[in-house]
Length: 296
Image (cartoon, rainbow, N blue to C red; front, side, top):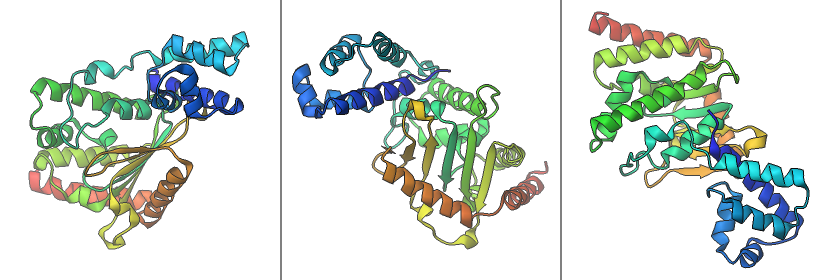
């Protein structure tokens, strides 16, 4: 399940290194390439799909003569043009306002990540949701999507969850700080919530899944400003990324100061949350309450 965005980001890092070694600015390189500055910037940040002629010209400008280095850069171009496993499931699926924005980019980054650290304030993290819970959420957030599109998005999310169970490479680590209100908020009816709480209780016992409940008594923290995720990316694929959901649009932050800020906010929330054992016990309490109401 290779992710082309990882190759693009690594290629971008190499191009940025070469430009800096040649003491050239983005504007100067763009002038030599007779293209826009934004094109060079997008190549260096991994946001553009690289083309062989462009990279060959940049290698000429930067004086890359080593055959090994040329081969490495061209391999990254090739890998960066591959399709991700998720694209058949997202192709043609339109975003609704504030929903599904840059879906492909997020899935590609998550696919490259070794760990995800999140703060979930409204709903259960997507990697922990049951199919029934997913469908209930999507029915509310995506009222204009067809049943076929919803089926594809559900399959996408279920496939993403396989990262928590994989053997090679090592399974994805998830550290999810979840507000207690998520356990309390009804989604999809009593049976759906009971099944979701059962899944949370079971998955919380996995060594690579750390679910921490932020109790109501913790009060207000910086983490309550909004949902975010810190994706830890292997160094050879690029820098770590913070994904922040906002009312107007979602943001991806990769600056060192931004990543460190959100790492601190997550750590503060983790410190205020219940322990793993206490969190699992609270999930069990909510589960028993739902089971008593549904007769399960």
